[in-house]
Amino acid sequence: MKINTGYGLFIVTILIFGFSLSVQAGDNILIAAASNLRFAMHEVCQDFQEENPSIQTKVSYGSSGNFFAQISQGAPFDIFFSADTTYPELLEKEGFTVKESQKVYAVGKIVLWFPKVSNADPDKGFQAVTFPTVKKLAIANPRHAPYGRAAEESLRYYGLWEDVKEKLIYGENISQTAQFVHTGAADAGIVALSLAISPKMLHEGRYWDIPDESHSDIEQVYVVLKKGKEKKSIRKFLDFIHGEKGGNILSQYGFVIPGTGENGS
Image 1 (cartoon, helix red, strand yellow):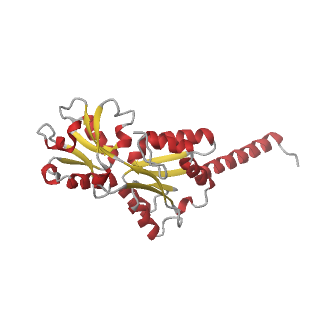
Image 2: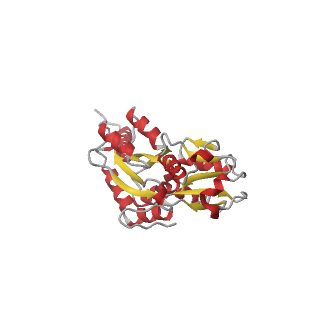
Image 3: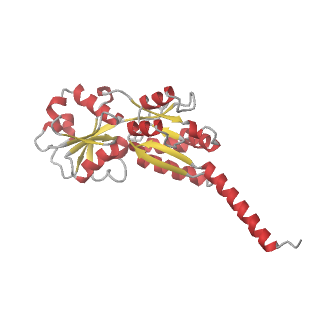
């Protein structure tokens, strides 16, 4: 039987191409990340992919509570970078994670942010939110956003919750909260430091650092999910996060790195 060599080469090429695609798809990392990581994680993934061009990272951002619900319902993420410890612990209890894969990767901070056009003085601290010029104060929804819970704790700590609760507007997550105050939908907002010093907001407003003692530590934990258990690329990514480059990027966005006590704020 005569073999059509051109056709045979075509089939071999298709098989090799298909195999390479399947390998590449298998190396993709699907990440669910708390929205306060939006800018920092973008840079982390860019630098990681420069060193590992065969591994693609795909990141979705949102509130930790909503991701908990999605993962519980079968969302196909490989790693979950939460803004707190609660949701990863719940996922582990319910059997959605690789056992003992939880780890604190950063500690977050909150600030009170005002747009430059505001007459409020950030140097007045939290008392500024009681001024008549602050008609709307944005915070993340405390029901499912860890940064929203920290905001509520701080307001209660300073005895201001009752004074401002009628002014509050709630973002679905901390990123939407920052958007509210950045676009003028709110006159001030309690946002993540990582967003306040992002390129989008750094030069368009002023902020006051909310003292850490006024709220619970915002320990941010990642956990590897069962869907990512067999992916060797995940280990590389997590090593990068904990390495010098990954740590430097997180520090530059105001996160405190465990074991160093330092950040870039």
